[in-house]
Amino acid sequence: MTLEIKPVADRILEGGAITLPEAQQLIAFETWPQVLELAAHATRIRERFTGNEVDLCSLVNAKSGNCPEDCKYCAQSSHWNTDIPTYPLMDPDQMVERAKQAKAFGAKRFCIVTATRGLADKDLPVVCETIRRVKEEAGIIPECSMGFLKKEQLLALKEAGMTRYNHNLETAESHFPEVCTAHTYQDRLNTIRMLKANGVEACCGGILGVGESRQERLDLAFALAELDVECAPINVLNARPGTPLSGNQAPTPLEVIKTIAVFRFILPRTRLELGGGREVNLRDFQVMAFLAGANSLIIGGYLTTNGRQPDQDLQMLKDLGFAI
Image (cartoon, rainbow, N blue to C red; front, side, top):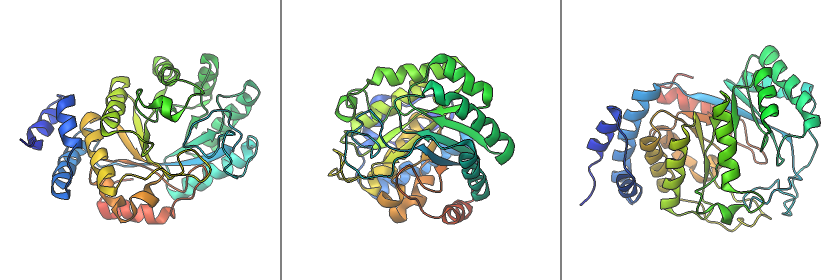
């Protein structure tokens, strides 16, 4: 018997939660009529808990390449021959200029990203200065994504004005060793818990298409719910030549849209951020992601790949009736 979607959605709207067996039935849907009904109820949940506003975030690849970690999806790992540009940490002037550009695009948040296992102590003063200047000179909310942090580093970044930190789980705990062996899933969990314990918002999500099963996608979503993350980026693998996952086949648009909708059922109050790979993998279905529960968007490109023009995304969101 096919699960009736409306009673599950109604329970969530009343403050309840979806069960794992229910989520397993929803993520098994195979047809567009089923997924469209699911998306409609996901939109009801999104509107109830997060309203009609969409957040825009822009990234800067502030330090590129030569990362010692062996994440199999990442073009910036020193373990793979991907022939990307490499450079050390940008100076504050460069990053502030990028932040001003992001602000001009309409972004609310600006994330400083470095390809590294963790933030080097020598770089901490530079990053703190940049955070202060981004906030003051560009008038945009600064975020960071720099791998593992020491508690004293986190507190210094927070003191400088950072309120949210990105550290993705990437996939389910059961699948994580297939994606990375240089550190553990538990290492990532510990970082997220340290953020929460010190009053810093957690931006934490994952990647679809890294060889995970549907069940493992659910495991990731329920882990994010348990962590109570404020924002969950949903990326879709844009397989990079030279990486071990270069031959992976991406999920279909139907699979991605359905997964976003199920994530909304599991994470009713979280910002679901559509991220890397959307242009390549969703194509004309990008608008459907926002009709299935997404309410945040990375604009202006990613770390080693380009996105589409920000004005196209702004027009899409305007046509959908979102407040930016």
